[in-house]
Amino acid sequence: MSEIHLEHISQHFGEQIALNDVSLTVNEGEFFSLLGPSGCGKSTLLNIIGGFLEPTKGVVYIGEQDVTALPPYQRKTGMVFQSYALFPHLTVFDNVAYGLKVQKKKKAEIKEKVMESLSLVQLEAFAKRMPHQLSGGQQQRVAIARALAIQPAVLLLDEPLSNLDAKLRKNMQTELRNIQRNVGITTILVTHDQEEALSLSDRVGILGEGEIQQIGTPLEVYRQPSNRFVAEFIGQVNIFEAVYNEADATFTVPHVTHSNGQHLQLKAPATRPEKKEKQLLMLRPERISISSQREEAQPNHVSGVLSDVSYIGHSLRLVVEFDQGEIIVHASDAAFPELPEVGETVHINWQPEDIVFLDSKVHT
Image 1 (cartoon, rainbow, N blue to C red):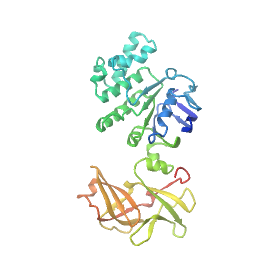
Image 2: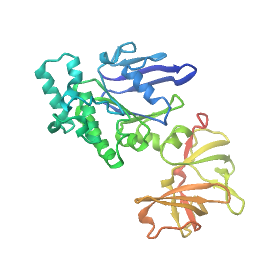
Image 3: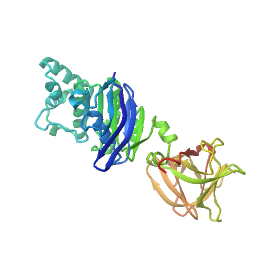
Image 4: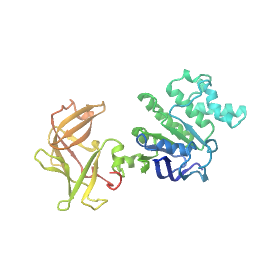
């Protein structure tokens, strides 16, 4: 069993609280990502799992074994660091063989396991090369092969792709996921890259202010964030602090005002999780339709002026400004034969079901 179970993990550095009562379970064979901004405690948590740091409080289980007090080499974990941490004076073969030699494996077994691991990362032909003769992506694959060679129960990845350029990073993400699926190893990835976490993971844990804000599938944390912190960290979002109108079941948004002086009125899904007057509402930019011509009456419709247009190839990021406030819109490149210009009047609309209610009690 290689399930990972953390119970009430806290980590204090003097008066600074890096982690505060973190509990989570990573299932056997799962690819799990810890996602959060810099300084949120995600690398600290990974080092606690790996045994490089002892928690101030809490217990770490790998399988059914309490490993909290065990050193790294007794935990059956393989670690891949951001810096790769390859030995520059050793060949690729000897780098991958290092952990096996520490375990005092026989020479024939070491050779077999090293070549198996290099085969997994498609580097068998590079066994005799030195690290400086490899590209960044190849060095990263050597680091992964070294971690897998000792046949760990758990693979720990600490921002392993952050030093690669954008194209190589995409390629390595695909390779990393394929390797993990082929081996079937329980994997925890630490990253601050939202797209990386969403594309690679079975589930994602969002860390913020030293606490777990939400755990869920990539679809769940993106479409149904539990609170404002998660909503604003995962992708771009429009947040509305709204007041409910009992008479017509709409929401008034005081911080967005039309040119006629009226506040923005929203129609949201009929079912509200919290029956209270003031609520936080979320609307993803890609859920909004935009046109230069006013369409037929829609449940949610508003006109405004473009204050910013950013073209990024496959899509456009548009900022629609009102007398007070603004709304961000993401539109497909195909929707605009010609790029709209700043200053143009546009019409936007969306469906009530595209509005998501956020828990306003947590980290708002």
